[in-house]
Image 1: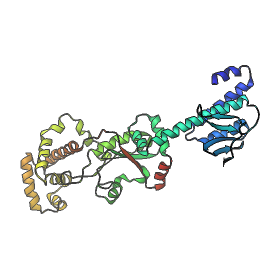
Image 2 (image 1 turned 180 degrees about the vertical axis):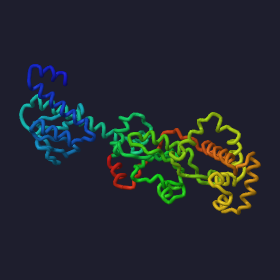
Image 3 (image 1 turned 90 degrees about the horizontal axis):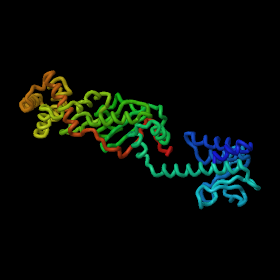
Image 4 (image 1 turned 60 degrees about the horizontal axis):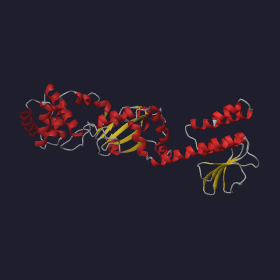
Length: 365
């Protein structure tokens, strides 16, 4: 149609005016959010006559030339200029005037019908996608343009700071920075228990929401080092990537996960019920008395256990070098237990201290 109008504009001013109308209506698409309201107002203002769009059976959205909106139920006049949204369908948009239709009015109706059709298709696509689908796509896309569009649909400012949160599944969460003090995200803190329960949780680095996918990668890395908090898998259940960034790279060291130290620790923890929790406590504390206190075990019992464990491992673990070897072996064991989950996220949530922010994200859908 635009090509025809350009040719017409060479001979008639009406063609040039029609082109201006087309360009103006197309600008509606460039807005972050637009709907029937924007279309019907533009129709009325460009035509100089009231306009209406069918919303549902018997209900119409109407705008006068000033942009004043109303819902009406009086059926449109059969002789008003009208346009169908789909071939074979009923008329869906009208200009409230009688008489022959002008070129400008034909262009307004045709272009507006295209916008309404596009809006209907977009709404149908939105309805087919769940909240989790949108956030899961945001977590895995490298396309910043797509990420920005997804954030707008979620009602989240692309420039706002956030963290990715990963839990088994994998479940992806987006935590707005204002709602989370990561300095207090320790496994036994009441804040962590309230927010994350007892599930293994990895917290990604703080980034702009537009770069959420990068934070998600680091959250998965942190999750691979989060423990179940059990006797067999003791340790922190909530892990921040910023605390374990170097450790998360250990899996890339060739042969590390298959080394003698790692095999020895893995075997020992399988065979001796108290091994994993005792070794973890030794790594985390500077003295055996502190280990005994944490494990609610007598100091002499810890000494006896340590002698057995060191005999099986083949090195002293209560020295600087020995403790480092043990720490690296325990980290590698946890990586073997959990690994980095490369499956697509299967569920999602947005968290914020301000519930209004969370509600707004849901309402945006």
